[in-house]
Amino acid sequence: MAKELTQRTFDYHCIGDVCHCDWRVTITNCVESNAMRGVYIANIAISAFVFVIGVSLLVHRIFFKGHRLFDTGSAKGCLRPKPIDCMLLLLMIYNLLRLLTSVILVTDIASDMVSRSFMYEFPWQFGYGAFALYLVGIAQTLADSHKAISSGWLPSPRMVDVIGSTFFLAPFILNNICSLISGAYARTNLYIAEVFVHVLYVLWFIHCASLAAAVLFSGIRLVRILNRHLAKIQSSGPRYASVRTGIFKIRAVMGILAVCLLMFALLLLMYGALRDQIMVNPPGSIFLGVVWNFLGPLTTLCVEIAIIFNPHLNENTNLGLKSSSGGKSTSNEETQSSSFAAAGLETSFTQSMSQHVFEDLKQQQMQYQQVFQKHSSSRHHQHNSNALAPTLNEVVELPSTKLEMSYYNDTKTSSLEHHDHSLMRDDDKSSQIQLVDER
Image (cartoon, rainbow, N blue to C red):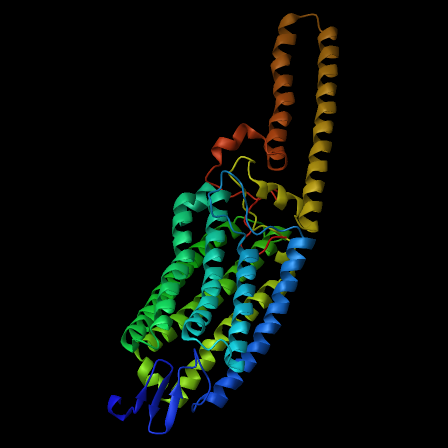
């Protein structure tokens, strides 16, 4: 194939009078021009559409529901992204930059190779970073929510900080260096420019494949843990439906992310290894361009649909797991104030019933004491009184003990707290599992 090339540059491979272009940096004066121009125009429309939806969701969640992008609690590690909100923000940045890149290619402005090479690669780092922060947000939330979950699923919050920061920052450092060098040498040293293109997409393959593996591993482990928790909840209660909906949503979002990352990893590895062959094959080049350019916006649209069409979980910030942070987390307060109406009514009803039971038992105890006093005054023998007192004391003490056991779930009595660190309790209030939604 190299013998057939009559002209070989960074952006064009020509065979005779027929030229094929690298549609990443140019779409003019080549066989693929019309097809790829249509692809980029369609990409402008799709990116704008998902951008408007995403910004609307962010405005609604942040300004109307009071969500935050990061949790700044001192005992929670350094990197504390809110999974859904941070993912949405970075996906919106990605789609906006992709829209600008498409406009640059369609209008053929900023024609220097450094700008073209950098502008094509830079947006993808935000798309990749959105998935990385979503995974880190889930990991840190679970690590802070319950020791039983964090010890059975992931390392310490500090280790999650290190791993998450590596996932997020590596493409911004390594990939930008490669894209800038390849663009800088595009006109002066073709060999160096093409070598760094190959290195760039091998790096992209490593980034995407490793993150996809982490998403699959953590998603499977997390769903198993939540299924075990689901088995402990009464199927007739509102919490059961909430947790079940949350599990479905986690599967959907993580499935979307894993499929997108794996497909992107394979595409980039293929392009990095077979760039010359792909450029001179119009059907293969156009097909790869269509999949490559539409994969990101369509993934964004799927994520937005998963967020919008889930009313049960949108009204419930948690998955029914109790926090083990001792009440120091600000997420506890947010989740407590945002519990959905059914759970709140159930909790209020249970607490009011417990108060009524407590008052009834107090009255019953007073009646027992009155009966005992009357019985003591009517009997003059001390041994009868001493024999009767323990019996009545046992009767009086037994309801009080039962009250403490039944009242524990609602008032969080600390007398039994040390016996239950390994269990996930459903108290409708102090959960922090904001895995796929918050409110």
